[in-house]
Image 1 (spheres, rainbow, N blue to C red):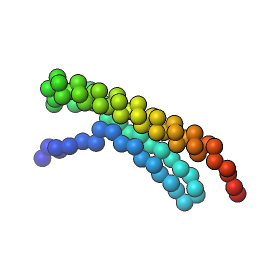
Image 2: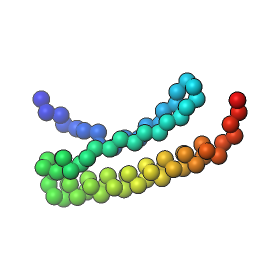
Image 3: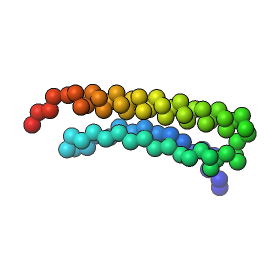
Image 4: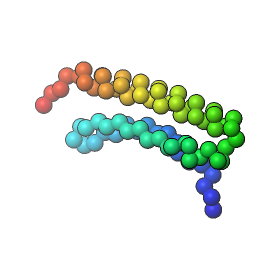
Length: 74
């Protein structure tokens, strides 16, 4: 049975018991998917991936800046 969907882009915010906060972005190389889409669909997908990646970078940088500015207590 062929899969009907694929995760193309994800952003995860992880917090572990030691208090460590980790951000993770995972993306798929959509060039491998090109044969499965029309030219128009692929163009839209490529634009979406570019725009989403840019916005997620902004979120990542925002979170990182705020975490670096917090007061650390031990």
